[in-house]
Length: 72
Image (cartoon, rainbow, N blue to C red):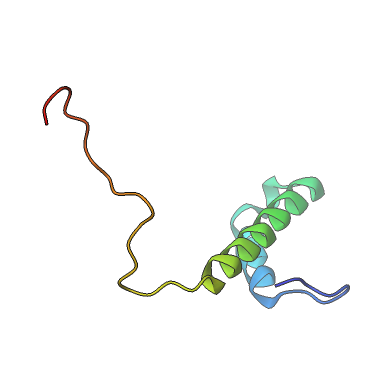
């Protein structure tokens, strides 16, 4: 999901529009850039997770077992 120089992701732009409408008057340019960077990072992470092949029946790497003291 790497953006080429000068090319903007339309999803990020839409999210930034929502941020501007809701919080624009309270944000300075540094705040806007920080939010944009966070959104872009989240989009990159989401794409990486979506690209990982996982079938519906795949089990987790560890199995949760509740701690019950010395009971077995």
